[in-house]
Length: 587
Figure 1 (cartoon, rainbow, N blue to C red):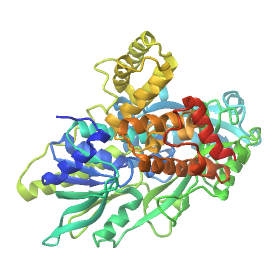
Figure 2 (tube, rainbow, N blue to C red):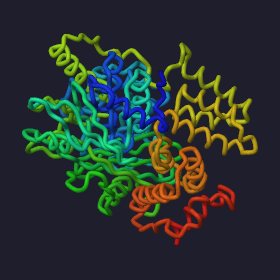
Figure 3 (cartoon, one colour):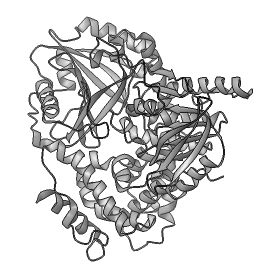
Figure 4 (tube, rainbow, N blue to C red):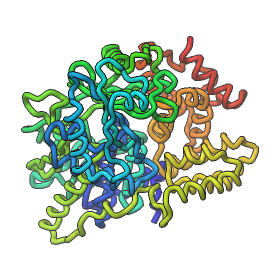
């Protein structure tokens, strides 16, 4: 059985979903939906999953990109939640070591701040104990002088000391895709750009859905014994289709993050600090950049495009300049940004930052199961809870007994190291890469995205017939082809934003390779003239969101770019990419 998550097989997956009655149909391709599909398929259920856009295109690519132990939950008295997410964090590090990486975090302590020195020491001790933090990562407390040695950029006025502890940095979009690949490897049928239009009922119970392929326009009838709504910020819209939007509803809150070059904010490690007004925000170094976030404001606009306002930018810049006065960040230092929505369960009388991050399940009269709540770190436990419910209901209906959850004992795609340590696998791949002329740092970058699956990319590079290409061109080709064949990459935005993160964290590279990416994807996916134009428009819209809105400028569209379909035929890829992108942005 073909278990690759291939864009070229996407139509067959949809046909497969409609060819038989599934045990479970999952609506939503974020981290929660991916986790449910993975868990259910591991138990032997027949599973289909549909996502109306790309995988992780909503909340699951727009978080603070931390698998964290929940220090803020301790402040809210959520003791059980701290214990759960601490355990899950350690498990995810073992299951996906390429994507879940421990990083030191400093919590500065100031006079009249949210946390006093003693309270911080006790709080971090409790955090370590509840979260089961391993000895090498347990908290340390530092006084003022040692704190400034660790981080000279901190505001000195009123500084008493700091707490030093560990969080785990991740790539949220890649984690979602790797979990999706893990579900596919167990037989789940999965399709992005496939939207539920309406449900089907028999005897008042939901038995299926009409799903429109957003690419071809064809509608598929998919029947399932259980339908699970895991649509994140869109769960209430799905409940509305089911006529079951009553009782508790979502409260959407917006979180904005900004990216600057690390030289503009050269912090030595991540920090979590007070902001005037009572909130706390992070600054986190990553790949030569520093990103800043997050805001937490009630949001009532269009779910698809929450956007970044001047107020959002000013709030975060002022917060950083207050905490790190020597940074003197300005709006034009911002290179990119993103804005996401947290789907919280509304609690009357509580502000956005006070609302519990506990997930909740709703079961409608029709039998539709909805999972709501926001917690990247706890996605696997959320999925276990949902699939346990579905398994009980299936057993009650027809007597079928499914085994318990096993996702706590199996690696996520890219984390299967065949008994070796991650470092041993890295050394092995670096050695193999050197024989192909690939620099060690390029192998490390690939491993940070694909883990043990980097071997498949190496095989593609080693057998490439494009010998005349530079090694950089061969790397790009291999990465694009792999993402199409194994990660259902359908658009240039999918690749540049969610599969690689380059739009957010490597703007210069993105500008340079836009044209080669479009050319290679056009060749491999056989796009016609109409599709090429559509892809350029999608890309321009995304660049406007990530770059234009972050800077407060209006970027021109690619309307007069020379020969967009054949842009690389008369010039080199690099020249064409720079000309196309820069002429659109700098006129």
